[in-house]
Length: 321
Ligand SMILES: [Zn+2]
Image (cartoon, rainbow, N blue to C red; front, side, top):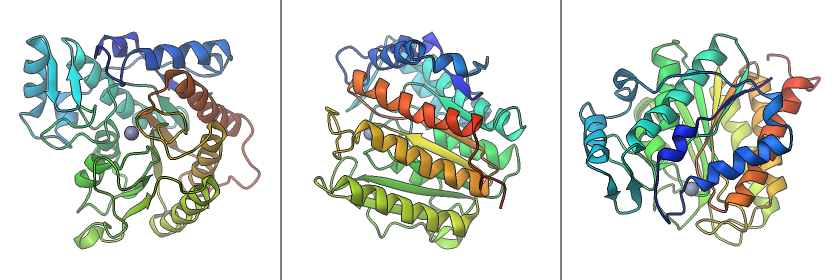
């Protein structure tokens, strides 16, 4: 089995005609049910992130600011980010999913989890929403692994078409959480140059692969694989987290780096190989972008199918190294 996190509360984060809209998850879940993939997963119950958990990454008064804005009816909280009355609740549940998944995986309940959540998180900053994101789901989950479960080496892999700037900022000086981000560049949000590698003791633990629009798919995959294998051998992660955005797909209306659905199966296998090689297969994947709902559904299905196949038929070389 694989743990699959989804809750209808995520649809209550209403954004109108915004590309990051409830329809994305409606189509994903419908497709996973139709293809039988959902039935191969376990669906845990979980709670929203606590204020203490959010404060692992965010400023102490930030949650209250978001909550007050939503309670007043929502609207545009930031240039690109819209909220409705229940958006803060949905965002807390999204972050809570990633944290709960980390807990269950580290306690050995399962080795894999996929969190199909919204709003996404990787642009969210310490004290500000950004780029469709309210709370940084993956960053809070990574810090939960370090602070609550005493891990020393966590690896975040971010293949969303946009640079994971919020995640990078959270761990810029933190050597315990490594990050590899592959993204379109120059592009929103403007960060993620190859020379951004962290600072102090964390120098070299942040790896950015900026790729121009028009880069061949084969080059994208080769660069991802070689950079990830290099970073993983250096870090030897005890847990692998994935900021799984699918907006690098050729038909994505927001992003696009020319990828096809099957490329996300290849990316998934590369990351699963790294998890098998270093972290005993322990992997938690959290949805970020992907704005063509039909395409997103197909890509998520490919990603989940690779996880399930690996769980059910581990590769012969998947023993701990
Ligand atoms: Zn994105």
